[in-house]
Length: 520
Image (cartoon, rainbow, N blue to C red; front, side):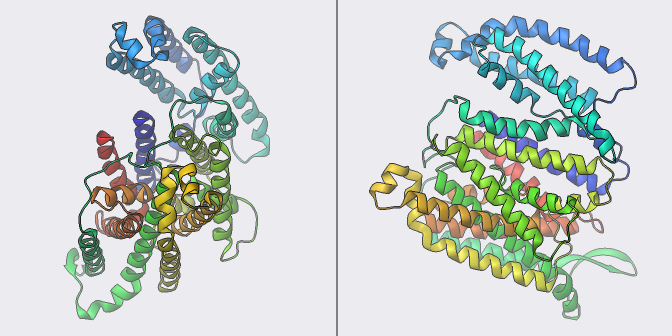
């Protein structure tokens, strides 16, 4: 479970780094868009020979590991009793998988979902032993990629440019994974509410909340008052004086207010999801809800429709609701087992990655606009828009506070919650609708990759805020602090160049959560 989660976090984290590099060097890296999206276009047989030699080497090593790896199908204690070092065996298996992946990516770019879909199809087709699954998966994977590439070639006359094969495999593989999820038998039980990063409870959580409130005020004051100024001698760091209040009101205040509101919204959404499912790994970013919002906005951007002022919010909300419905449909019968939740989130996020890759590799003039929005920039915030998002954030957050009883009892499981008088279906429906609204409002401002929804609830719990109401308040304040500091760092770290606040928050949150994985 930790390997799966850490892989997702590392993938999202490196995506944020890639987006930052593209924002600074889009023209010089434009030629890498198609390769990075997975292109099978070749000028000669060099890559074929390169991959063939390494395929033979990898097959030889896989055959050597085949028998020991088959023992992993047994219980862990049974495998250990046969004298197998599970640690060394898993390291060897992961190392071989990494070597094969590195060879493929270096030759043809990122090809998504073949490595996930082919073994699943082989298992459903009747392959039982590890040797059978390996052989059948290779054949099925080759056919999947070949068919996808043939479809891409047939579609090329209908599109302005050649669609990247890797992005198309992800676009086709994500629905396939969602179809396979109810049919896959995954190990694991329903998560317990005590799972995750936990420290002893604090006797007086109000002190912690007052401390977090003070930190939020300090972060806002620093973000408003300290930064770089330009004069005849160039740029230099300085506090603003009374004569520069127009600078603060017109430029800094809208961005700080927008970032604070987005942090509050995402932290509340993450806390609601973690409490509702009893899963400490749930968040709008990891479960694909933020990606659903982004997909709705990207589809609106690509379709030749008239864009009204609120249309982005409408399509974003539709995307969030669709992602939530998919999550519920794929996980309701299994009791929201973490493995299925994560795989569903991977599938939804893969659709976003595929759409993004197709747009970026098409030389569409809207690609730069899309890239800036996905990064979560507050650059275009105004006093009017900041006032609206702050009002929305405060109103939605106020709606979450009376739901403390539901958030306390739902992590105990549906039977226990029903026995204590909670209408589980209605409470989940209300919470999911509220999560959708919170996520839409925040994602439209800071993009789909920020990690605040995953980071803030854990940090609140680490500070000893375990009760639902206290955790909501603590996570909201922490979300404000992190997003305001992220926006401030994005404005000043490479001044006069700027990084979007969403990307900086993703970098901060990704580092923290990878550190926190060591404690799970």
